[in-house]
Amino acid sequence: MTTTLDGLKVALSAEEAAVWAYPLVGAKVSTGYQSVVAKAHGVHQMRVAELSGRLAALRADVPDPAAAYSLPFPVTNSASAIKLAVHLEDGVSAGWRYLVAAAETAELRRYAVAQLAACALQSMRWRGRAHLTLTQAFPGT
View 1: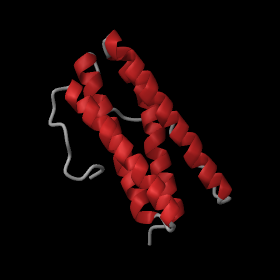
View 2: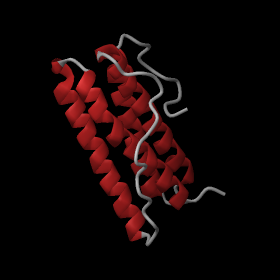
View 3: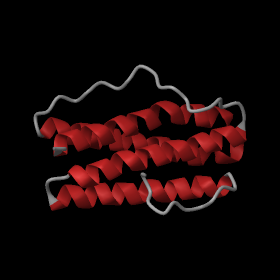
């Protein structure tokens, strides 16, 4: 059975991956996207802090982030960096979707749904910049 702690840790891991990879996005996107990348990176850092705080409040171990993550494809230019941003937001959506299912309280479920929706919206924005299909039927799947 999946527990709230499992869900919090999955969401935290997904957010940490985004925090690790967004600087690579920022290094490769055109200058017009730098502020968008910085804002997204900051949001993911805030969520890492929030999730770590929730785990600590439950007296659970807060896992350390991975030292590095594998990229799904080479990131060599602005177009591939934007595709990475889409991939990151979709991955974080999956982490939040996991927490929605695992949440044992209505408050935590509402919080996870709000974060899932925010990630899905950010993914849609990046998809528009990459001229990809804008929506996913079920974000996080």
